[in-house]
Structures are given as structure tokens and as C-alpha cells.
Image (cartoon, rainbow, N blue to C red; front, side, top):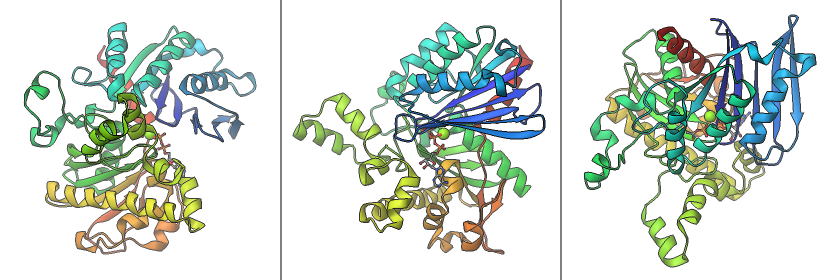
Length: 400
Ligand SMILES: Nc1ncnc2c1ncn2[C@@H]1O[C@H](COP(=O)(O)OP(=O)(O)O)[C@@H](O)[C@H]1O
Ligand SMILES: CC(=O)OP(=O)(O)O
Ligand SMILES: [Mg+2]
């Protein structure tokens, strides 16, 4: 049994190939900076005991092209890990928005695809890419069972007082407008890792997923009780190209005063704002370089980005009525020590005290960054959405 996992994010496609019950992939890779300058694919494979890394730098305009690059790497003869692509029995797909009806891991039928398509307007940067990924993989691996694992599933335990919006009730009962929350596969994975690391099943945790999309979750004893994204992945933190929380009156102002159409408003908030709108670049590595050059816009943007995270930490410490650990994860959370330092500065009221030396040191695996003896653990936990998806695929297949 081979399980191929496809995780298409808004700016990248990550993939891992697992054999049998092993949690160690036999190859993995990343197609990144999709639609930006400098896009590339990085493919890692261990052949005859030797680690090989293939880096293909080329323009990759969209997720469909990204999937084709990925598929070609998997079957490239000189580095092939499979004798035949037909050996892949299952393809697990991350799907960001499952809406009201797709609430648990499921095998993909035409009906499931239609439901994912019906949610395009609620996840415009993601669900269309997932459908492309599913369709390309149905063509490439027609013998495999295609499985969907949803970002929204982990957030189903959020109580009504946190998932409802203060708008007339029929918009909830008839139109299902509510907080769904996203990055659930990642929040669930890193919170479980943190509880095990702390040896505390009832731990009160705040998970901080900072990728191109960014969100936080408050997790009490393994159950999510609140999260920063809402009906769509636009709410909450400042992201690569998304605003996060803004005064909704700005939308009305744009339409009334500037004559913006609905599409223009959606594009502005989803694709042209966040770090991109503030600095001209959505990629934190680029923004970091500008910061180091003393660029005023980048300095302000970093401060705004970290300040928003701090405010959610305060809110979630109150919601949890306690705090054992905060956990940084995903592209920025795992790699950008400066962003972590900014978030943790002047947070001793919450028992959060970062050790700058530990924070600046790179190391694989789980890292503990707080000053020894301080109350709240500050952890960096590499997320592994692909492994979590493979595990959920196995559970689904076991029950069928
Ligand atoms: N070494 C690094 N230092 C700072 N930021 C990084 C580093 N590596 C990746 N990132 C940032 O991580 C973000 C992408 O995170 P990722 O979790 O891969 O996103 P997504 O899954 O949403 O596409 C980008 O903003 C990128 O700049
Ligand atoms: C939900 C979301 O924003 O996902 P990503 O960060 O992978 O774009
Ligand atoms: Mg991601």
C-alpha cells in the first residue's frame, strides 16, 4: 500500500509518499512560490541509503502546473521510488473548506467534489486548487482511492458562543454563516504533539500557525474551543496577502466611495492585502530582507503582524482561563526567529519569556524556547499536515 498525500496551500503544494504503515515518507517535496518570481520544486528522496535533493527552478504559474511538475518528479526514471505509479493505492488530499456537510475524512465521489466546488466563494485561494489537485491525481492515478481530509474538522468542538456571529439568526440557521476555522489538521497535529511533549493530556494550549495563511487556535485538553479564522480563511491574523480582521465598514466604503465591484473587493482583501499590501511582498523572507535594510514599510508591517498575534494570545489565555504553552508552527512560525521574538516581547504578564539565544538557534524537531523556570512554555513544533493526512487515510480505510 502506498499513500500519496497532497497538501495544496495558497502559495505552495507539499507532498509526501508513504509506504504501508510507516510514518516516514519514502519521498517528499514542495512546490513553492506558485505564481510568484522564483517559483521552484524541491524533491527529496532516499535512494540506496543516500539522500538526494532535486531542485527544479522554473516558472510555475498556478496549482495545475504545480501538480504536473510534482507528478513528473514522482515518476522520473533516474530517481523513481516506485516501479509503477499504479502502485499508489490511496491519494489523500488536504481540503481547506468542508462547510456544514463535509465534517469528517471521506473518500471523494462526484458528490463530494460538487460540495467542495460549491464552497469556492468561501475559500477562493484554496478550494479551486484542491479540485485541480484532485482532478490531476484522478488522471495520473486512476486506480487509487482519492480521500479528502478537511481543515475545518478539528474546529467542530468550538462552542456556539464562539462560532456564531451577531447577525440575525436566520443567516445561521438557513445560510450556515458561522465560524468554521481552518488549518485544523495542523492545529490538531501540533497540539497533540505538545500535550505528549508536556506529558499533560489536559494542557491549555495556544497554537500559532504562521504560514502564508495564518491562524491561531485555543485548545483545551485536546479540544479546540476557539480559532481566529471564521466563515472563510480571511479573518483574524495578518497574512501573506490577506487582511485578517478589519472593520467591515471598509468594504462598504470601497463599494460606495470607490465604486469597487464584489470581485474587486474580494481580490483586494484576499490577494492584494496583508504583508503584500503593506510592503510589496507576500513572502516573509522578502519582508525580512527589507526590514534588515531599514525599510519603514517592512518595519511597520512586522510590528503589525506580531501585534495581532499578541492580541489573540491575550484573548485565548482569557478564553482558556490558563495557559501551559504557546506553540509556533508552519513556514514563518518554524523559521522566522525574529517574528517569534516580536510576538513574545513584553508578554511576561502571561508568563511568556523568550530565551533569545535559544530562539536564534536552529535545530530539527520540537524546541523549547522559554527562559528556564518561566511559567508558560514557548514551543516550536514543526507541523506535518501530510503525515496527519496519511494517518487519517489509514483510519478511514481500516473502517471500510
Ligand atoms: N527560513 C525562513 N525564514 C522566514 N520565513 C520563511 C522561511 N521559510 C519559509 N518562510 C515563510 O513561510 C511562508 C510560507 O509558509 P507555508 O507554511 O509553507 O505556507 P502555505 O502552506 O500557506 O503555502 C512564507 O511567507 C515564507 O516566506
Ligand atoms: C487555510 C489557509 O490559509 O491555508 P494556507 O495557509 O495553507 O494557505
Ligand atoms: Mg499551509
